[in-house]
Length: 157
Image (cartoon, rainbow, N blue to C red; front, side, top):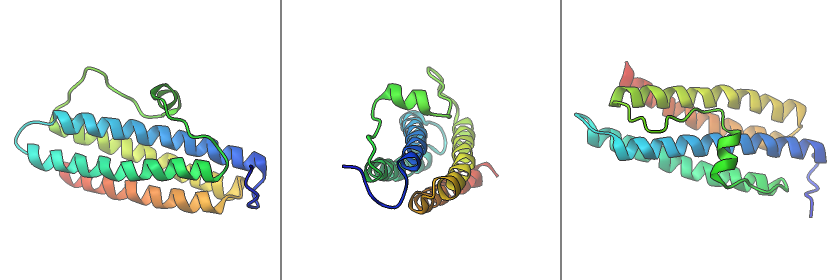
């Protein structure tokens, strides 16, 4: 049964496409954080190990909320590694295990990339798709990434 929530079917499809792309980015970043959590070593091992864990746990919650938002709008949520890798804008680095500082730089760059795209998606959701709920949801997600970015940036100052 299709939702009758004051958003056209075309706009719902566009919102679902935006959310699917965001979900792919979140999953890619989540997996990268897990990889870095598992492989960080050196002087600040425990501190960074816990930092990365905190961020991937925060993303776990966001990932579930994004998937539920897709469902609320009447869509089906993607859920395979292939689907995620096809839709993500983030780059992976298989077989590479960077040093601590490079891990921090890479994660910061990924969060900032996500933030830039979320800003565009917020505008699209609100203005073109007439979907204030998704725009508001994405604003909260963007603010979480801004905080995570700020935390990483502090390690690099």
